[in-house]
Length: 524
Ligand SMILES: NC(=O)C1=CN([C@@H]2O[C@H](COP(=O)(O)OP(=O)(O)OC[C@H]3O[C@@H](n4cnc5c(N)ncnc54)[C@H](OP(=O)(O)O)[C@@H]3O)[C@@H](O)[C@H]2O)[C@H](O)CC1
Ligand SMILES: [K+]
Image (cartoon, rainbow, N blue to C red):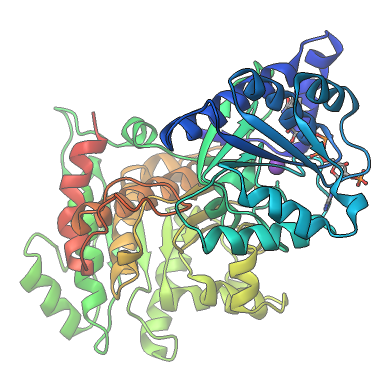
C-alpha cells in the first residue's frame, strides 16, 4: 500500500526528530541530489551537466540548495534562481561556498526572462519553490515563471529532466487540486512519506514517478490521509475458497440491473461478477435482459432467493418508474438486513431524496456528472467541472451526506467513505473509457462485497473501512483487466513513456474476459 500523510501530520511526525537534532534536511538533500543525478545519467551523464534550481523561500528551497552542493561535487554546473527575497539562509551559504552560481532574479526586473534564459541552458530543472508549507496557488512571479517553463518544456519534450522536491510546487498538497500554475515533473522526490496530492487527481498526473525517501518519521500512530492499493494488498484481501466452502458460503450476489431498453448492462455486470469468483449470481429483471443473461451466462440463476449483496441500477433509467420502485424495495430490504449494496447509474438517483439515507454498507459508483447531480439534489450546488477539479473533496462530501462509500469513476478512481483514508487508484488505461465498462466494475465490486456480505451484515463497527478498501480493490482489478485486454504495460500517471506500448481499443466484454488474466498476476 502506498500511504500518503497530510502536511500537518508530516510536521507533527518530524518535530521530535528535529528537536533531537536529526539532520533531516541534509538527508533529504542527499537523496534529492542522487535522484537528479539519476535523471542526468539516464540522459547521457552527470559530470558536465547543467542543473537549474528553482528556489522558493522555505525549507523546500533549502533542500534544493543543499542538493546543489552535492551536484557541484559530482561535476555539475549548478545555477540557483532565487524566486524569493528570503532563501534558506544556511542552504544558500552552503550553496555559494560549494560553487553553486546564485542568481537573484527578482532584482533584475525580469524574473521570467532571466529564469527562462538559465532554463534553456540546463539539462535538469529542480522545482523547489514550495513544498508542504505552500499556501494557495503559486504567487507571482513564481506563477509566471512556472507558466513560461511549462510552455518551454512542452515545446522541447525530450529534455530537460524536471525533478520536483517533495511535491510539484503549486499543487494542493492535501487535496490534489491544481488551482494555478504547476510545472509537470518527470520525478518527484518526496520526503518522509507520500503526500495526498501525489496520489489524488488531478495533481497526481503532474508528479511523474514518485520516489518516497524514508526519513524514519514516526508515522505509525498517524493514519494516512490517502492510500493507493497495490496488487499485494488486493491479494491479501481476496476471498480464497477453502475445502469446506460451497456456493452459499462463497457469496451470492443479487443483480437488479439492466432494463428492456438497456439489457446489455445486466449481462456485463454478470460477466464481471462471475469472473471475479463467487458462489452464485442471482438475476432479477424484465424479460429482455433476463433472456440475454440466461443466454450469455447459463450459470446465473434467475429465480429469487437469499443473497449476501446487491448491485442495483446499472442500465436502469431513472424515469423507468416501475423498475425504480423495485430498486427502492431491494435497497430498503438490504438496508434493513445490513447487507452491502452497490448503487450504480439509475439507482444513484434513489439517494437524491434524503428519505433514502443508507443504514447498511453501501458503495455508490458515480462518474463526475452523476456525483454533481447527487450533490446538487442534496443542496450542494455542484457542476461536473467542480467535481473534476476537486474529486477527493466532492467524493468525501457525498460520503458524508449519504453515509455511503463513494467510488468516483475517472482515469484515476477516487474512493471516499464518510471517514478514514481516501483511496486513489490509477491502474487503468484511457481505453477503458467505453460503454459498459462501469457495468463490469459494478459486477466485480458486487461479487467482492458478496464474499464479505455476512461479515459486513454482522459487523459491530470493526469493519467500518472495509467497503472502501473493497471498492479500491475492485477498481484496481478492473483497471488491470482493462490494461491487460488493451495490451498496455504498467504505468503511473504523468508524462507518457514514449517507449511504452500504447495498447489497442477494447470493449467492456474484453475487460470482463481479461479479469482471470489480471487476477493471475495479482493473486499469489
Ligand atoms: N518531510 C520532512 O520531514 C522534511 C521536509 N523538508 C522540506 O521542507 C519543506 C517544508 O518547508 P517549509 O519551510 O515549511 O515550507 P515550504 O518551503 O514548502 O514553503 C514555505 C515558503 O514558501 C512560500 N510560499 C508559501 N505559499 C506560497 C505560494 N502560494 N506561492 C509562492 N510562495 C509561497 C512561503 O513564503 P511566505 O511569504 O508565505 O512566508 C515560504 O517562503 C518540505 O516540503 C520539504 O521539502 C525538510 O527538508 C526537513 C525534512
Ligand atoms: K516543490
